[in-house]
Amino acid sequence: MTQVPPSSFPAPSAPSVPPQFPPPTSEWTPSPHRRPRRAGFAVAVLTGALVVGGGAGVGGAALYDAASGGDRASAGSSTLPVVDNGNRPAASGSVESVASAVLPSVVALDVRAAGGAGSGSGVILDSDGLILTNDHVVTLGGEIQADQAEVTVSFNDGRKVRASVVGTDPLTDTALVKVDGVDDLTPVTIGKSSNLDVGEQVVAIGSPFGLDATVTSGIVSALDRPVEVARDAQGNATAYPAIQTDAAINPGNSGGPLVNMDGHLVGINASIRSTSSGQGAESGSIGLGFAIPIDEVLPIIDQLRAGETPTHARLGIQVSDVAGTAGSSDTTLSGARIAEIEGGSAAADAGLKPGDVITAIDDHTIEDTEALIATVRSYRPGDTVKVTYTRNGKESTTELELGSDG
Image (cartoon, rainbow, N blue to C red; front, side):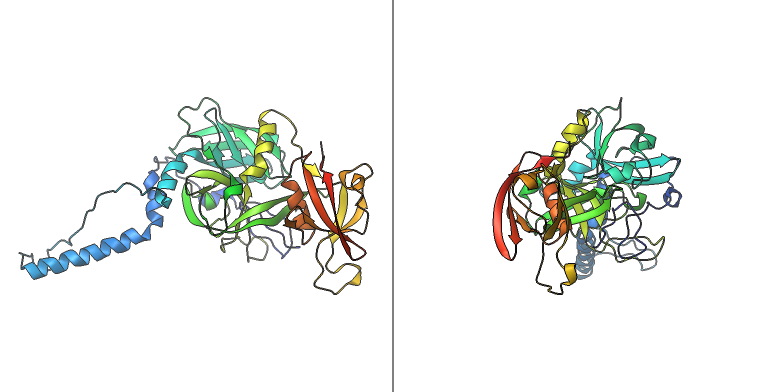
């Protein structure tokens, strides 16, 4: 099973190992006197077409001067002509306009504890100072408890403020932090991730490698991609049906927003696929980044805001991958085979049995255990789903009401 390292972590040391820590923050020590950022700077870096257009304009002006026979200074003292088209307003729906609207809502997070230090990103949810990020950002990849974290929030205008952790949910890699006494905050506009389509353009904003307010863009390259990044001591998986994007996402982007071209929050950048190997090697973007769909975490956010323990949907089964089990060499087989069923669980009440192979939940194809966990995690306790399964080679379906781990 391929592990997908959270995007604030360095690369794994082997093909299938849990995520590791972020790089030491000393490598990216900010200047003690940070100047206020200019919102247009990160955008200007991206819009290389402006440089090309400017160059073409220079050439045109030089040719016109030569053809018109205008007076020219000697080559040794002449000044290169410059075409100044002014700082034009960003076109509606452009990456530039999206960056301008969303950058004030994005923050950088520096986390320190006795066990180490790390950095990540976050996005402002409301004017009271509530900020959404990843659990693995505030817990340093699960190495510390959230209440041990000393979190510093850096805003887009240069302000730095200490924050407190409101709550975390490791199973969805979600966390909330809060700053108090900070005025003039710009909350992000929350959209619907269910409206995304493959090929749709998106923008990611965050602090990769500690480089605050970095803007990258790309497209949605896949939807409902099952991604599992970790398991706890009880075997519970951190997994989600991810938005896959080719927007450049690197260590430090974790917790930052993925937005559509209306500037609406549709996902939280959380993990990347990397080709790096070797202990201590840095993972980097290869065009495979994964974001947690905002639709899936909004109920978790509401529970954390209310001071509640988050709940998750569950079937009440233990499963294993079909491919390669029981000595099978049939590569056409796929699904999640039920190994054990808890008495009184949703699966037991629906008549499922050990040995059944789950192949679909509603219209979501289940290829393996990772897909099953991620798909069930996208539902809420009490939701009714149709389960497609095979038993002794015969396909059947059943409807059941998902249980709760609460």
